[in-house]
Amino acid sequence: MTLMPNETARIRLTEQRSDIVSQLAELGATEDGALTDDMDFGGAFADAAAATAERTELLGIVDSLKQRLAEIDKALLRIAEGTYGTCANCGKEIGAARLEHRPESIHCVDCKAANVS
Image (tube, rainbow, N blue to C red; front, side):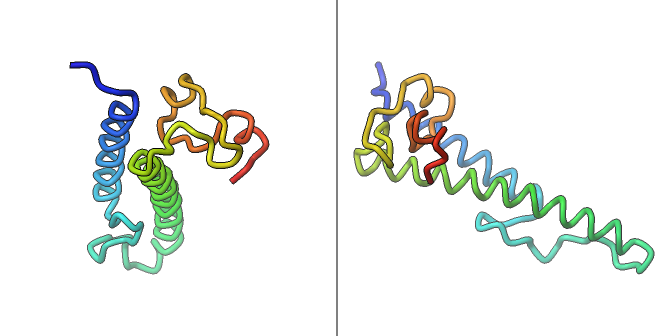
């Protein structure tokens, strides 16, 4: 059985989404990026600077994963709407190589290079 390109992309994106949600859980964060109450950064005053640095680093990683999750969700929505593979800015087809490398892409190479959001 041969899958259609959009079906292949949907499967890859769904797998990536699941992986990211798992990573967030391992970091002690929910899917929306909120840290769970069971995170312990140390309570001693002497450890305050280290705890702050650790928390800041963790929040940066969580934010990055949250952004990636949002990109994946947008791509999955575009698959459902039938607009996947078309640039959200200019309407041109997004190259197959770009979609193969970054299936969550919603912009063609030209629009991404122009930093269109």
